[in-house]
Length: 194
Image (cartoon, rainbow, N blue to C red; front, side, top):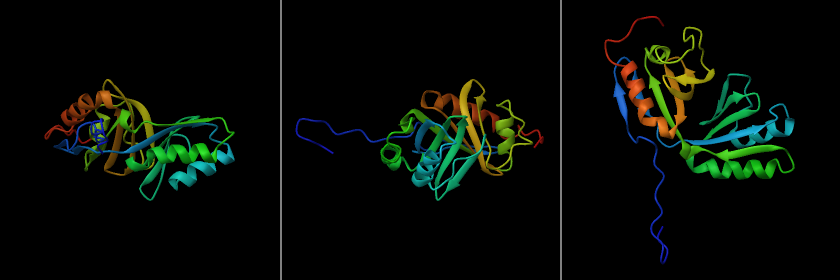
């Protein structure tokens, strides 16, 4: 959009557009994703209803992710959720929550552009993450999320289904995260634990 006397606004870009690596698993930058961090009383019925209204998914139990129609809700801590929506809907999601929860104590912020998202897919996806995070991947199940470290980067990851793991980190650590995941996925590095 160009306005008189103003320069064209920059387009949103993901952290590492199109970055992929294939080895024992495929590591790929997932593109633009809408993410809203939400804090509040997760047991509050009005909050549960508002979260379901904007995502279609229920507030998950501890260390779980719920999804519905391409949107989702991830448990991050006893009073924190990560809402996942299409990138173009993140601001509207925050506005809808503000309207629905007027008078309630909560916080909702669009953090989409502060995060980077990667997918690790394939038969050895568990092994790639298992090499890097202090999580027993042999017991990690679909629908679970962990907020931890992957190598030296604070991250969260969840498994939608066996062989498909999504990793979220701060955008500032995107290049390091991609490189680290790629090294762990190098061909010939499988150890056959999972």
